[in-house]
Image 1 (cartoon, rainbow, N blue to C red):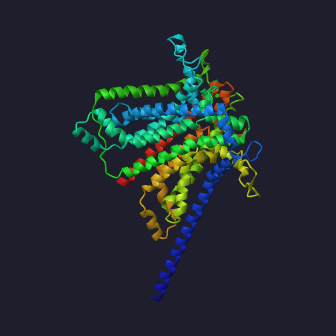
Image 2: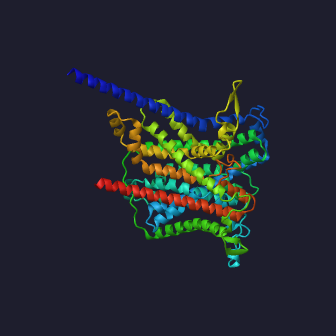
Image 3: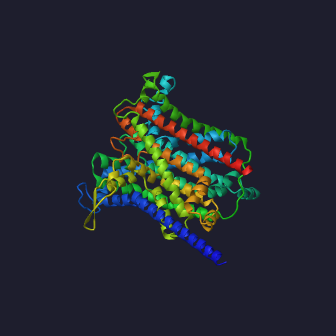
Length: 584
């Protein structure tokens, strides 16, 4: 009896030791993750903030950079231009996306799957490609401008300026607005429509009294997402902006063209203000939506209506054809010898032998950077989300981690790139009169800083995806593991990861695709020895090698489509495997 009692005491003591070690490891991982998040996000933004109060020679001048900005007629004009372009883009993109999403969700149009995937095609292309496509369609020698080489009357527009930027930004932001509104329209309550019918409300009155109020938070989110994306985009204004300046191009000119880091930082902070405002309003809208969804709703049932379906099919068909036409125009231009003078089929532009494009090396570099971003970004994101969601201690630090994870949504890519220049390029910092070495200076100019910038830029959406998947898991898994003395990392690897594998693959795919197409976050960070495909498109366009830039765009689109297809097949295989196991 005494021996059995002593054995029980020993087992309990070992379980307490394991539990203590388990909690200690979780604490250390959480602290390390918070420190990494601070180094990757907070410190660079703080460096950007400080730099805005110094001149180009490093002398403290206070708010003088901001005063100079608002006293410059040229810079003020670019701010007004940015607001104008973003406002018009928001109206056009959200309006078009709302009707398109309504057709896909609230009607019986034929080919919903095709329309859904065709609407997402612009997501796989750099924003510069949309501008290049517009040049080949509406430029001086464009297909539509020349009336298909004189076969029909041409349509001429002043492409290089606000019209071209608005068209390119509308194409760029349309998929994001469509995805948000499609989700919003999918959450309708059938009971509200039945009540409207019973009260004799007509279709128009029902639309304004039921449909619009039910999707108002989705509309608000799409409006601010589109406005922020168009407000901070660099690629489209660079290709089709001409002499029409916007804030994003001003930042580049101040930093790269004039080496005026202080003014560049000031413009970067101004660029971030609308994004922060949009982020705050969007967060408030989402909280109200969550509080308003307390009752159980019935799924919406689509009523048959042949006229409605035919009209919406025609609308979706026109939009899809326009999106596909842009892609085909770029593909055609990249596949002929000399547009439009020699239309003989040729693959010479895919050789990239021009000095301005750096050959296929830039494309290979992008594949490496995107793959590393997907690998390390997915691991860090999912582990950090797991610690915040499943660890029950250190509540204050977990809330701080959640806040740090959401902040990148409000930080434009150009601002991230600027912050990284100001933080990682310095070998020493002066703090409170003391000079301190920067231990992270060695990262500057390497592939590592490009990967880190991409992770930070696209981190928030990935974190939300991972957290959503983790919230769906039963909390009993961790409680049972703790009671049995199983280390948390074993539960994480053997239970959590397999059950969340579709979400993990989605995060990896999201990191990869966006890393392939982004320019704004890395335009300041790439080194001459490590140029990227999206950046090479800008360089080739500047050098007049538009056909080679089109060819590089096609390579990026084809790569991203292949990655997306691989993701879809992997998820399909996982679902089939899980269903077979459930049947057994």
